[in-house]
Length: 317
Ligand code: MTE
Image (cartoon, rainbow, N blue to C red):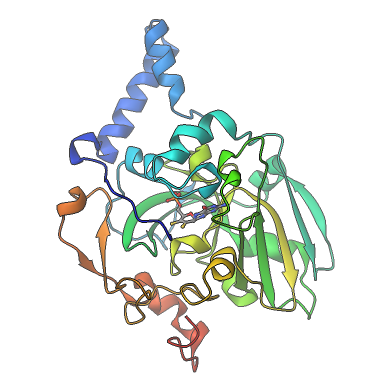
């Protein structure tokens, strides 16, 4: 976000998805047959193994997902540090995604705490292949696993006063060394308008690549909002609160001239310090790959443009 990064993952480190899937099934079969020695078992256990299948969704993009290694090693999760490698290095050891509760409250008729295992069973899981476009002008294609946030929202019955949804994520200094830095006023907070949160594309996400979310990608649950800059997709949620007033999100609070509430992907509104007109696709040849033009609403305009009819999106960025 505010901090620029230096390096990228070399193309040679990248495993195409098909190879990754095949390698994993070979490892799993070998484990089942008791063929792997101690070293093999240790290597296999490095990867989160719990499966989380989802039925393929018609809302998926046809683009090719990045390699699993890219998605799980090039992360923004400032609670674990500001470098892209920090979350993969620290979150697997430090974050404890069980037991986990999420408070759903505020302007709702049925406020409650949900246990993560209950949330996992609340609605049928889908695999949604979405682009995520970061404000830092890179993008990545990921097969996420989850269900529409609307499934949860309907169950708590928002009142007529619920105009916005505020997402709060875990801030535990014992698990999160990045909290020592003042780069954000913790906890990390994000917000959506209620109709954005109810939109069928807004995914309550529990997994990726057919597995439970690795810690560095926001275990045990996060939001993925594919038409907004990546920072709207808050990780490791602990509270979903329905409110009447527009919430102030963490980035907006830290740099109001640079980050707005809406944060819709918009190639015609530059970040004050760099252009948003194009992007580098992770997994496509590193820093020297051809940049691709950024699409309005990250290419999801057909589905979401109506939410913003009549709004001046240059002013309400
Ligand atoms: N959520 C929390 N709690 N903390 C963060 O620092 N970073 C955001 C978002 N969610 C962030 C977060 C940003 S800037 C991006 S681009 C995406 O997570 C990155 O998600 P990924 O690392 O799974 O690709």
